[in-house]
Image 1 (cartoon, one colour):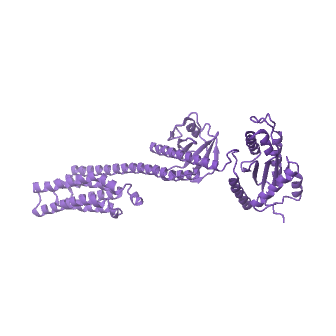
Image 2 (cartoon, rainbow, N blue to C red; image 1 turned 180 degrees about the vertical axis):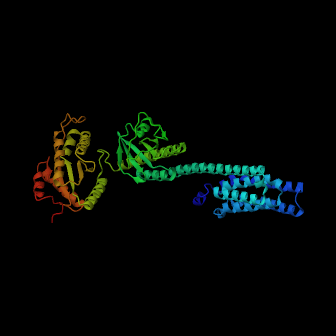
Image 3 (cartoon, rainbow, N blue to C red; image 1 turned 90 degrees about the vertical axis):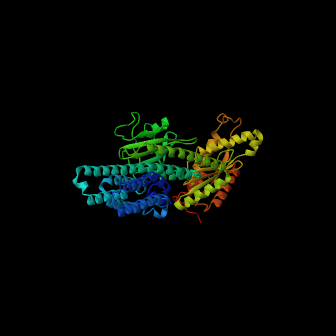
Length: 526
């Protein structure tokens, strides 16, 4: 139904309400014309009956048109031309039977018909009606051509009619754009109400921008430290992914710093003295720009819109952008909160590293990716030596602190793509994507050395020495071709390290040197 209405810009009910005043004026004009014709008795008896009939038919048509035709969707596709042609026929008949002195009333009636036509049907049918009626009148009434006063009168009616049609068209266009903006905001707010992913919020924002604002560039930036992460960036129809910029000194930086909207219709004339243009995307200079802050409990960012043409935006566009930013900030807050809650459900409550179940899930994903990309993956199983004895000697609170500090030490030696999980008790598992056995052994040795070197004084809240750790390493796909076999092999090597005297890494460096001596084998051995 909305698509059918889109052609006219308003619903049939709204069109009927807007057309009612001009319809009433048309009915009153017809009543006056008929009454004037009858009382003055300027026509013959036959013409009086014809005038009365035309008047009654015209009044009935206006009533039916407003009450039944406008609200009915069945008439919407042909409504404009039906109305214009019907009005033209009626006005032509009246023009034919009325005396020249009554044409001033026909002019008024024509203007009411044109107003109704412009409100309901738009420019084309309205100008068709105006042009046809003017040419018809000039053809059958030579007085409008030969007499300059009458010609001026005819020209005046045309000017008034054109002014009315254009005024209504502009008002409809403005109202249509405002309605469209409100619909965009409403649809966006409804769509994001149940959205729990930031990526989906960005997709909905992208759709809203493309649907409601004519812009060459637009972006959504989220502040991360001293950088602005452009979650969404389109420039001249091209999408740019994962862009990071320094907002300091830029227009976006000004919006972030002052938490105020910035509207610059012509960047050639009005640019902030303490801000400079920053080119991203295709590095083409915008001539119009506006930005609004996007601030929430968990998010601080900016939405920017630009155009290569000056004066491309107005205050209504800024209002729309501000509303979208407010809704987006709330939605992103919800996604961040949901992500935090979901992440907490995957973390061990004591050490704040991944729990056993979620680590297994992530490890399976790492192995699948390693299989697809033909890359190695190493797994380290790590256990604290004599941890039960340590707990019995120094207490469980000290033991808990040891676990937390150990995890911090391990994290300090891992990359962003590596994952650490608590396997159970004092045992931990480390997944190292793309790392071969030799590289994993180096990482494990650095962890072991860091634990040994951590003295009692360096552990701020621990009044006891740091215990040592033992570690076992296994490599996919060189030594095991699935996650369970990989875990089993690394776990066996962990206990081999303990049997060798603890504070060990198994296998040692010599094993990997020998294994990789003939190159870099990463295929499973048979």
